[in-house]
Image (cartoon, rainbow, N blue to C red; front, top):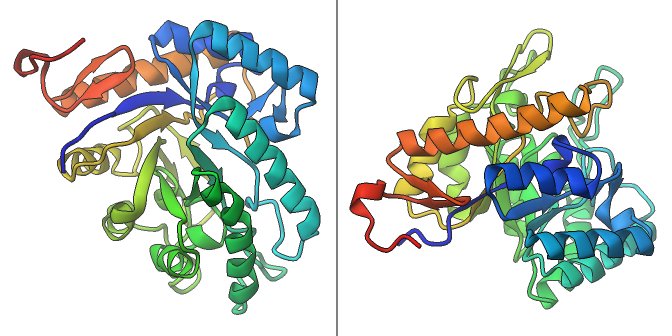
Length: 317
């Protein structure tokens, strides 16, 4: 399978809260794609109409395209027992705004893991109800030609690669966004307590056939304490370089979105840095990501990734 359309993107809400700051960070890298999540601290599907219209105008003027919409739908903070009518209302708003933004991918998850008082997963994860709700969430997006992609975060589908495959079998049309850091930062709940980390390469090998989008993250987790640390790409324990090399060799043809988690973490408001530190960390992370691809023999230009060295590529724009 021939690689085509490879490009770099970023969760630029880690660089700045406001749309102008997010655009400035992408422009500093020379990239043209944004993985949209939040602006001014509000997820795009929850922004008021005026703020959303202003954000759309700013993105259009800057020539920034939305490659994926990182919604909060069914994420790690949402119980499978939630008010489903309210969740579907959020999904309808997300769909309407994705059409306006011409975003081809919607990031969702598979609801919070049900745990006991010691935060250990319960034997009964209400799979039948989860899968039925996921099918209902995915249906309107699939009908509109938008691909729902599940992220392997701390939710049911991220408990192990076996959980992911079981979910995919039950939810036709659902694909995967593979976060390179999450397996190595998440316990393998198939195994006895204290749960070891998941094996990043093992997870990738079992799931790569279903992956249409990749998040670039790297880090380390202490299985004894659960403590997490995040690093520049290739400096953690998540086998990032090997996974990217295999993706290129296997003919992967989608995008790569950086999610540093070093100066700002979306799900942990206690981790915050100054605006300048956030901006500089994001840009540095992007530049190191470009260098990582070059070390794999790729050419990187204007956010596009060509899986051959510049000296061997005759058709670069």
